Amino acid sequence: MRERAPKLEARLSDEARFFRSFFDHPRQIGALLPSGPALAETMARGVDPTAPGPIVELGPGTGVVTRALLNRGIEPARLILVEFDANFCALLAAGFPGVRIVRGDAYRLRATLRGRLDAPAAAIVSSLPLLNRPEPMRTALLTEAFELMAPDGRFVQFTYGLKSPVPRKANGLRAERSSRIWLNFPPARVWIYRREQV
Ligand SMILES: C[S@@+](CC[C@H](N)C(=O)[O-])C[C@H]1O[C@@H](n2cnc3c(N)ncnc32)[C@H](O)[C@@H]1O
Image (cartoon, rainbow, N blue to C red; front, side):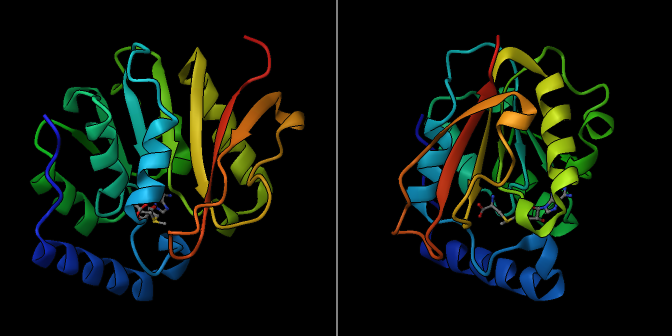
């Protein structure tokens, strides 16, 4: 069943919460507003819902990408959300029954997901503001992410930047990128990374 878009009033209050969180923790939140529907749908299209295994979302915030993943036909029980912010975790728990929510640090992914993955993940979908972290930390995150995924797993990431937010060749990855999504504020692009050799 298609997840209904939240009522305007609820959406406005989600946006107000997000905005407030940005002022409290700008580096962690990394955006003034939640992603728009065009960006969220492009992120979700990066996931193959028929690939077996859990799907991990990093940095779900108020849940706009989560909603797009559910609308893509992914069962709530397959989704594991990793979010650092306690207020967002409470909001997600209220809005997405049946989805597993882990309050923790996505940059310590193996430790954060310990005991939570019953099979290798099919995909990891990240809205983390990667460019606010040094490059070795981004590379370390992708290394752990690929270790937790099936051989043909995909790491889906959006960025407001002009280039890939992680070096591809050095990390043995190939990548596809979407066109720039001008309808989003700020405009963004989605990158899908896979292992070079499966
Ligand atoms: C740019 S917002 C994206 C929110 C939402 N997915 C969207 O697209 O609107 C980044 C999110 O990542 C979360 N985040 C940042 N650092 C994190 C970390 N180390 N571990 C888990 N979540 C983190 C923030 O709390 C925030 O919810």
